[in-house]
Length: 230
Image (cartoon, rainbow, N blue to C red):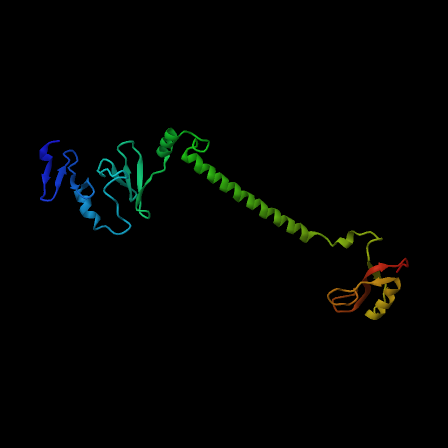
């Protein structure tokens, strides 16, 4: 290096890079060169937006290996080309995970079934898994809805019972002025009438028209019927 590239500022030496014009000052405390302009600006930056003027290995961050992308500081290691992103929350450089990073990792550490997949393939697999899960949930909801609809449309089971197991008896031709007690007395001659669990009343019914007049027919539910026909 030409001695004219250096100058003493009364405290330490300052070096000017002829190619980039960047000036570096020798930091005696840290025993390394630091960028003069960036060092003066670091004290003025806000907390959380601070970016060091050196890379992960302490090398000066020059215009050749330091840039911004979408507001994120990117540092390229001049030794192997590895790129790092500045993490504001952790206040440290973090490896930039992209296609290039995965390729370098595979070359350095070998291939596994997982590492053989590219970043786009991994993202596609994750999207397909999420879509499959969503489809399964949708099918399960449809199945439950169909089951509820089938149960709602199902007819009362006693309509399908045969004469031996059906204990509900329909009677017609009754007097239109018959009372419930008279109907109970009459129907008890043929068996034991079931009681309603909720009300405790005997399960009998006399049918009437829209005006409340008895129609002469009724229904009776037995616990057990006798051999006598109604």
